[in-house]
Length: 256
Image 1: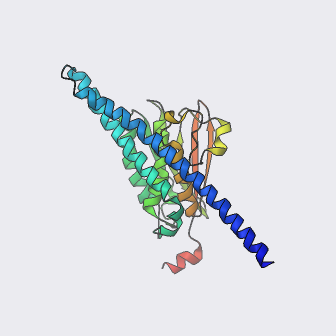
Image 2: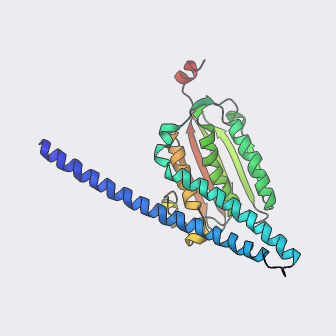
């Protein structure tokens, strides 16, 4: 009996090891691809600036593109770092009982500027029910999770579009909604959307790091005992809904 248990345990360990190796190989492949593309673009523009005959207008354009792709590279590097350490997120959360309003305020302030540069209307709406709602969460990690969704919404919404960050609460949960009227996600892709290496509806180079960011978001929300759902229609837009548990009466009394 014990021998059979040991054999099954060894088999499970070997299976898990193979799965881990596959994930590592995919991670290295994905990281290499996503880092190479912006680096190639930056290098191209840098070489262009070395041309003594380049017009001043083209120099300005080159500098702007270098800055844009450097920022994207920085964001992507952060996503890859979080992806690499994702299994330890739950163990290292700095949980604190607090309201979520200041966290959302910080995100709104940051992304409203980003949206404005792209000529997108960024709207921020917090219902009165959220103001005093106490939750246990890690503000830094939630900013990463929600920020990934807002960044994607802005990225895939055309100039003149609308991106909205909205929050409301029930007696038991706080709901955070990130919506846009961008290009939307094909229905057949939604089931795989939060996979670490999946890119909906287009080749890898069309959505640099989007799949990675969504996977990181899903894992952070899960570590907070929350849930995330998505509704989308191609050509109409997308709504992501994050559901986080409010503190129970028992938790609230403990924090007094």
